[in-house]
Amino acid sequence: MDAVYDNLDLFWSGFLRSLGICLWGMAGSLVLGTLIAAFRVSPIPALRWFGTAWVTLIRNCPLTVVLFMFAFGLPELGINVSYYLFGVSALVLYTSAFVCEAIRSGINSVQLGQAEAARAIGLTFGQTLGQVILPQALRSSLPPLGSVIIAMFKNSALVGAFGVGGDLWGVGNQLTSAQGYDALPVFTGVAIGYLCITLPAAALLATVERKVAIAR
Amino acid sequence: MRFTRTKAILAVAGMSLALAACGSDSDDGPEVASDTDFEAGTTMAEIADRGTVTIGTKFDQPGFGQKNLEDVPEGFDVEVAKIIAGAMGIEAKDITWKEAPSAIREQVIENDEVDFVVATYTINDERKKRITFAGPYYQAGQQLMVKDDNDTISGPEDLKDNPDAKVCSVTGSTPSENIKEYLANDRQLVLFDIYDKCADALSNGQVDVVTTDNVILAGFVSKSDGDFKLVGEQFTEEPYGIGIKKGDVEFCEFINKTLADNEDAYNEAWSSTAGEVEGSEPAELPEADSCS
Image (cartoon, rainbow over all chains, first blue to last red):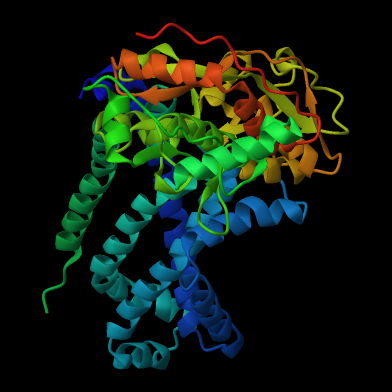
């Protein structure tokens, strides 16, 4: 494991880079996913239709294809921003479809009577969703949501391959290819780096889940 | 049977006074030695007795080692490997090709998965700690490629003055390490897994410069219909070597001698592969390093 000890600074910068991509991806996809979920249950047919189309299209595309469309398709249309922004946007877009479905499963678990009661006392759709349905829905959405977010953390390795670089995966490649280190210890180090992101995240989710659990 | 065929080819070649002609027959490949006699216990003897050889090369490097539509790798590295195999009496059809991407080249040699590796493999001290290099068999050098209408970048020293200019290379490659000292900051460097993506990024304006070995860039320039151009001098030396098991001095010396003895086949190998690119210079076999 000398390969890892000798290059701890490289691993650390790669870890921070990966963590950054993961955190931006998580924040973005949770917000966007919740919004799309709201679309899918909204009373306006056009929005429902849009939400369904979004999920169908994006959930069924491989992430590499989505990344490719961002990194190479958008510049062809004259949109030139940094690869970091392209990569994180693609990750957010892709994950939002899964987040949306996880949240929708939570929304469906809330009894219809709750929504009817909320509408009956005069709450608008937005108030019903935001103050009555979602607070209950998110609790039962947490386990699938956790899986989706952890899968996204691991997917962030793909972003590194689309011009971003400097993330854990890129560091692994740099050490093995250019500097001639043995692949096995280096990529064990990379795996440990990812575990350092996903394991605390999983523990955090478990805690949150316990905290917000409702006695039924 | 084999003897008569070799004799027939030699006769034809002798009549036309063009020995190189037999190398152009792609079915036969380079000359195959018919009576090999190696000292027992050497790698050459082992391979010659076995009658087959496993060679590591790249499957995705145009001009050097790239799989064609029939799933057979083609390129300069592949031809050089055939010359070496031929000198041990192995025909092209008895060669097993194994993919050796940059990340695992040392590993496949150390684990005996291949007999040797010919894969645009730059000789450097880090790698010498784990394997031995024969050769070099080619001397490349790193250069810059820009769009044809780019007047601001004319060499690596201009990169520091243009901190907004983005430079593209491949993750974990030697060029991506070498270029770092010419950059004003880390954000200037954009890394992909293959050079094709760098060329795409250059043409759609996401990056301003692509850098790697001149021979690889020359291929893109010739394909670009004048959209790309090379600028500046070669600012590094990238001697390509043949990777073999660490400490196998006899095999290393054998490979160096084989290359030196087969200069016609070597030149033919170059001009039929990477040397086909417009504007590329004829290859010259560099003087071999001492084996250790």
